[in-house]
Image (tube, rainbow, N blue to C red; front, side):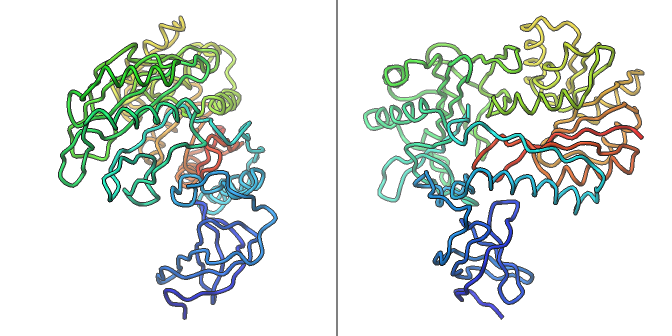
Length: 452
């Protein structure tokens, strides 16, 4: 029987979906962060449950051939990048296997084409958005960076290798402004203080960049000085905004923004289309890999110009609009009113005249279209992490599209849904993992389903 603080020697033989290594101690699975398949290590048990346990790497006895030196000094504390200690090729293998295992074990799928994962061109500086929580250390010093895994403890970070270098310069300028501004820092427990988050977005192709300070209030001390210091440190900034969030919530952005200087949006180009991006708008954080993901989705859609395309969970319209030129008609559906309005503007901006957008959740939109006699030939779905509910899948099946393209950010809920689609007459034909978030445990997947 294993107990907390016991130390065992063990070999890491597999990885969890969250990026921890798995070893077996006295027949029990033990999950160990920061390890790699092939490591021989001494593991200290930190928590024991009925069927499994959690361990900590006490000493590396023999390193895996896949192991490399982490290039980030706070990777272990931050927990965002769980794979910075292994080769990228090994990370891609893990992610591919994660998708395959989910589809086979959860979805019960066997007869499908598994295509090679679409690897990213690099593991660094690919994110076009970041949101840094702001807090105070025990000695009262300003700190911001990222929350440690499963906590609200801030890991103070001066540079993140996933973010553009311009974000580091803006964060450093913000630190300098704070030191002279006399502004206060928000405290979750007492709901007092002002500064909550530093939120930044950048257009990869346009180079435009916004800096948004999220505050528990409608004004900041020394706003003009903040603008001056940011513009001096980051000449490419095109807008400085104040987002007002007075709610007791973990949601980062409040509903309203005030522009302190410049523009209140940025623009970028994706799949040959121009998009305007407001602080609240959804836009894939890795634009380069998003283009490859959408390209694979378009390939799976197989549009010839004669089809009606239905884009459920359309957000600001990016996936559907990227395919509109090859469709007879595009219908998008999204529950967030601001996103629907943004999608309509994006269609106008790109002179796309065959697109219509409905403000409704996916199930309600599908029902409305079904009742008005719309018969989409192809349906694209890009649901949130929780996936689709069974009623939506039943409604999609009742509309009898020739093909369904499923874009997923969670292999487990994808597998569950593909099983339901199979029971509704749709065969999973082809699957492609796409690495939008190198270094992290996340993996996107594009799937083509055909009506049998």
